[in-house]
Image (cartoon, rainbow, N blue to C red; front, side, top):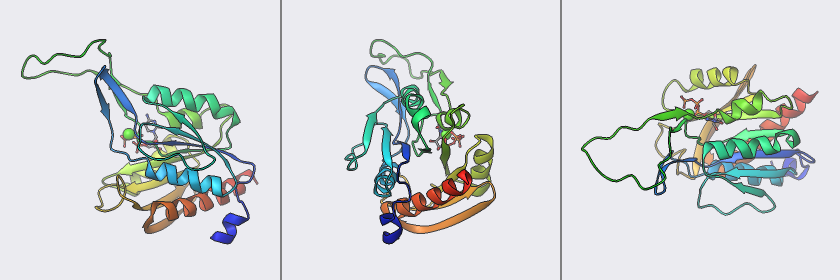
Length: 225
Ligand code: CTP
Ligand code: CA
């Protein structure tokens, strides 16, 4: 692995990675969000940089340090994350979407803090754009890799997303297993592409990131011919 990394499998590539959660504001003091530490995305950014790539990390709010020599673009909402992705898409070779994007946002953002009143309140939410699917359908489409966080029927849902979003590869993450994923330092995943798959046993997110970057680089090179 070390030797392969030293041979710089991603030399000259621009890799763009989304990471962390998004925050969808309800009012000036409240938001809707997802669990996401950003650790997997940041580990991928570090691994891609070590493999020779120029790396742009489009990051939702996390408490992690930016990996060395990676360009970090901070965003908060899904719409901001989409904007940041579209800003770099025409200059991107590989796009990896590890962010936990909120699927819906409040239909309206209250200008002032919403005051407590009755025993129940209702929120109207509207669907956010799908960032990775938008990038994968772009005219200047990069090699596009998604993630699938699932609690059940992991393989079937992941393969469905691979096809539906027109992705080149998808990393399937079983988030129902205790001790891996989410805030953990360890993760176990299966990587799917249209005519193959590769399972990765539980290991540190940084070790897994290196394995994933190698597998992505191999497939990217094969697809480019
Ligand atoms: N994703 C995205 N933009 C969204 C939602 C998801 O780019 N608005 C990306 C994620 O970063 C991930 C992939 O799509 O790479 C799959 O995310 P996931 O939440 O597992 O799938 P969804 O398509 O949102 O479906 P669901 O949440 O219903 O399982
Ligand atoms: Ca989702």
